[in-house]
Amino acid sequence: MRSTVCCSAQQRVRTSNRSTDSCLSFLARALSVIRNLSLVILIVAACSAKADYSVARTQLIGIDSFDSDPEHDISGLSGLAWDYDQQILWAVSDLGFVASFELLPNPADPVRIRLVEKFPLNLKDERLTGKKWLDAEGLALARHDNGVAGDTELIVSFERRPRLEGFNARGEWTRKIEIPEFFKDAENYRHSNNALESVTHHPKFGWILGIEFPYQSENENLHTIFTADGVRSWRFARSELPGSALTGLQWIQSSRLITLERAYVDPLQPFYTILRVLDLDQCGETVTCEPKPLLQLNSHLDGPLDNFEGIAKIDDSNLILVSDNNGSDVQQTLFMRVQFEHR
Image (cartoon, rainbow, N blue to C red; front, side):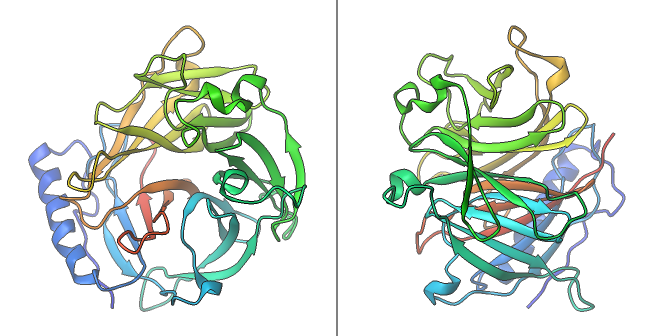
């Protein structure tokens, strides 16, 4: 099954709030036709973005579904990254495995997604097992754009035992990347499950990590991101929505990152998915960053959204997000593509 919807293909983001609300309401109604799919990919233009970006189009597409066979179980996806050399999408799960997906353009649908392979993460010490050691959250790649297919290294941030480690494409441990001692200690976070949620690579600053919630000694209204070498850190205001958490980071160009936030309070309240643009050259240790809004979606208004935690840039105008279903039968694994344009 497939459904295709266009919301003003060349419409500018400066449209009125009324037009934006209409676009998203139409999107929500269209989503209802695919609720029976076990897994969907949603391609969304930035309907609610602000003036720095313009709308492309909105499309809804079904993707290859996965049965209940454990071999095909992709629960708990929390980190996402795009391999330019192999043209595949990597994902890491907080259940301790890595999976690769292929995007399949075809005449019937603009894109489909297919599970290619899945491997357990093999830690350096085989005695380190269980959720507290395998709680993989963030994902970035090394050697994924050097023109050599097959030598990609997966850089994974872990939460309950905060650390940053490398793995090859078969999930085998390759190295440990040192981070500041302060951020290795789970006691410095508000909760053991609120630690190193995200990682991205910046061509100038190297590995940049994000903390899900402000750490214990930090202002509770500020998110913190920092370089793995401890040389630089940046702070920016949390979304004003209750329960806002930083779940993903993605470098896009120059000094700019896109931040992915999820806001959630309880099952009776909607999930919010929030994308903002952060310019690292405009802030630093003493100057709080002022992120610019890109996209905000509400699961009660904008369709079956869920707990989006992973984000990947696949080219200069497209992002893919993935949701973590927490291994729950009542939540979904969703892939969402956001089309955007730079100013």
